[in-house]
Image (cartoon, rainbow, N blue to C red; front, side, top):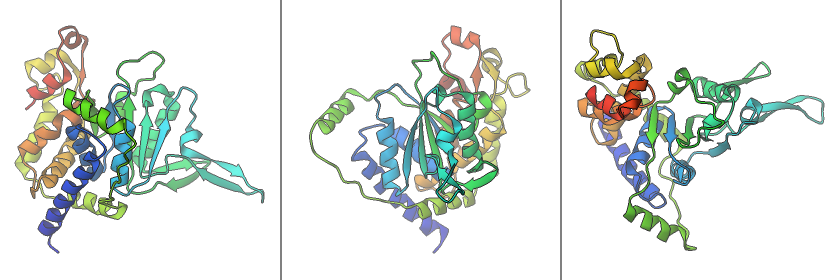
Length: 317
């Protein structure tokens, strides 16, 4: 089977997948698409939104339609690394036995990741990067595919432990989850205040997700598209020859090389899911905001003048 035929098949299955997810999740099409782009790219997502916007339901629904295991971890100030990674216990035969923690799943929802101390944050972020954990000197491989979706509440910041920039950089996307529109909220209320149950069909399985990730890696990219993406990232860094006046004035730190890599990977996935066989500049622009939102650090002057990070990113186009 040719790669073009394979891509066409995945595009058809992707459309079916979105219809299945829409049975449960009303609206939020852009958020669902970006989460799926990240999964098929092999990346992780940081989801920023107030409580009550069905983040857990959304991730659970996506996991079910993809045929993947799903676990949710509620991060709290007293959560220890062993609570998420697992620990060794002494069994009846006086032998040490490793009991796996909730991190051993295909999709892990790390709810309010900034509520737990840095030591526990680092344990999860190491698992994200290495796709494995080390406990008592033993290395344990995580399930594949492996995807972490971490949430942050942008309102309550008292008693939180903000993620350092180096750890934020491990997330492919940072996605803002907004309130639903009036009509969407009406549909949500109608759907969730009855005893009707909705049955979801499994559209993908773990093996197909891994094969799709490999297909994305093989997708060719024109040199001019790669150069455009790298130039965009270069322009985000203040005090360089490519820097614009707006960046120099309002940005403290720009994005690093991992942003360029993620920009190209995500643009490949965006192109394939929309039936194209190679990404173009429009695909790069379509994913740029989510890739760069958490990687460009604006300064106090930008905050004082109400310059949003989205406006700064749009200036790079």
